[in-house]
Amino acid sequence: MAIVNRLTVDGRDYFLPEPVTRLKEEILKAIQAGGGYVNIPPLRGGPGIDILFSPGMPVTWSQIDVGDSVGGDEDDLEPYPAL
Image: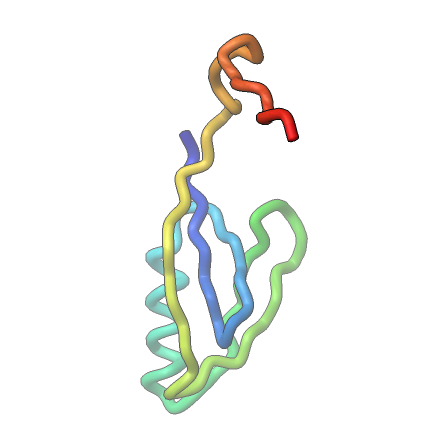
């Protein structure tokens, strides 16, 4: 299983791979300094996105376990009930 981190900033979600410790520290420093831009890396390739973090801005972190496959056989699945 892979872990994907979800960063929610002012109601917008950004999905990030591990590790995020350094990114959390950069965001905290920007907020403690009264505000500043932090580059949020992309989940897969690309330059990322710069976000201006400031004191009072709602920021939350969560982790999501993402499985490698759906698991189970199709025979194990129950069909939708008849209408």
